[in-house]
Amino acid sequence: MKIGLTAGADPKARTAALLDARAAALAGRAAGAEQAVETTAYLVCACGAERYGLPLAAVAGVTPERPCTGLPGAPPALRGITAVAGVIVSVLDLAACLGLDRDGDESGHVVHLRAQEPPIALAVDRVLGIARIEPGLARSVNEPESLGRGPLSGYAPPGSDRTGDIREGFSLIDVPTLLARHTT
Image 1 (cartoon, rainbow, N blue to C red):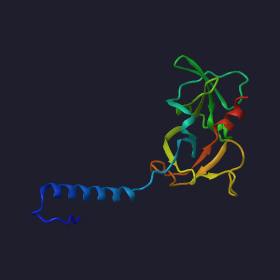
Image 2: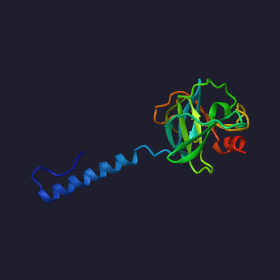
Image 3: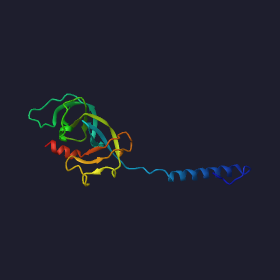
Image 4: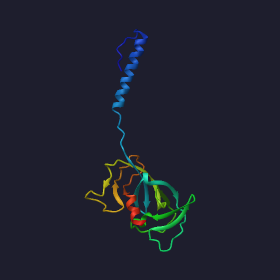
């Protein structure tokens, strides 16, 4: 950084020149800074060996799974009902909703969904973390190598998580479509 004043120059002029030079350097550094990238957050869960991402905007909370009271004549995907903070919640098995084999283990997590009436939660084997994906990196089901129609809306390939916490790829779940199939 060259100021252009000699050591014997007026101290006020020297200070002003230093401040101007510092402001110019900081302005130049900010201009080259990385732009903020818009991402969509997903709660990544495991069902067996498979990984699924639920839009974080649809998730109200996660709790350890508790025993459910089964309902006679209920569809296979409905594990039952349970009480959470004094509210009765229907618990759907995510693996069963997606047509996967159930392992029978009920010691995973329950993902409580936001703004559902009646309240609904999804039972998963475990919650792995939160991934932030750039919308352009996720493959849509409308692409040629699509996953088909239904509750899966796309796929986040390995390495697409901006946080770096989730290294494996995962399928993206369309929560309204999933619930429409299993709550009517």
